[in-house]
Amino acid sequence: MPETRTPYEPESYAAAAAALLGLVLDPAWIAPVNANLRVLAAAAELVEAFPLADEIDAAPRFEA
Amino acid sequence: MSATGSPTAATIAAAIAHGRTTAREVVTAALDRIGRLDGRVGAFTDVLSARALARADAQDAARRLGARRKVELPEAHRARAAAYLITAAEGATLHLDRLRTRPQDFDPAVRDRLIAGAMIPAPHVERAQRFRRWYRARVLELFETVDVILAPATPCRAPRGGQTHFVLDGVTLPVRANIGVFTQPISFIGLPVVAAPIRLDAGLPLGVQIIAAPWREDLVLRAARHLERTGVSAAPIAEFDR
Image (tube, rainbow over all chains, first blue to last red; front, side):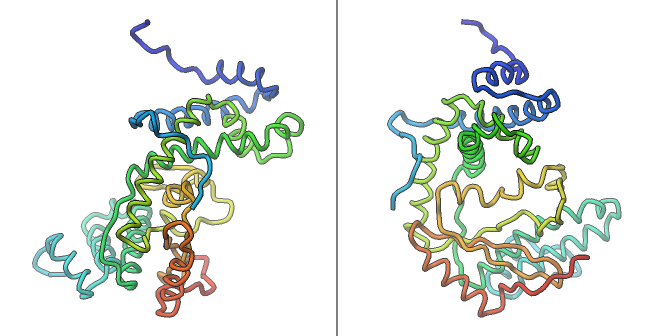
């Protein structure tokens, strides 16, 4: 196991994910898409930092 | 407020609680003092004061409704983050075919956000959904002891048409991604809400959210009607130069 986390590079991630998803990225979109990916990564980090018990399952819809 | 010295926070809180003053009067007086003490600070108070007054007005509206308790939504900042992840992924999934075939038809800011949303790793979305389960249970517990929760709907007055950025707490932020900072933690778990416009002056109003437990639309509509009848909430035609 490496001791330090590899830095996240949205640009290379977006290029690989676009190929997987069948999206064609105009070069002009790359910078704003990267900025969005960084915001989403920060949000994911904040959510993941909160400990949850294993038995708490997903809540994709609500019933009264 | 006393001319000889500043009252303590406890004195101010008691005065508001007993109706001798309002949160809006206290905040306005404090902002006036800051403006008098230092003209340079005044350059910042326009934007900071909007947020402070939004909170003060929500507090005054709460008092007019006979509100007696202050409750805190647990982990609201994390709820916003989780809501952001889920809506980005859901929006991207809904529009993925169109992003492939006719991306030029999207508003550029929406398109870029949707493309990024399509690339969120599944564990990030699943974790956000599991957090939503936890958060919903905690908020529903609050409704065991209160009927209605009041909160600001927006951090400032309505922005102008076409305005892309505003300043909150000294930080310049995009309007679209941040206008909903107070509504996201509520809509995230599907609670019924009425956003009641609270008139400050002849300018644009501020919104106050009236929030209740699931299926208690009757309570939020009743509270909103009370605010309307007592003149706390009103939506006259606004002057746009304010």
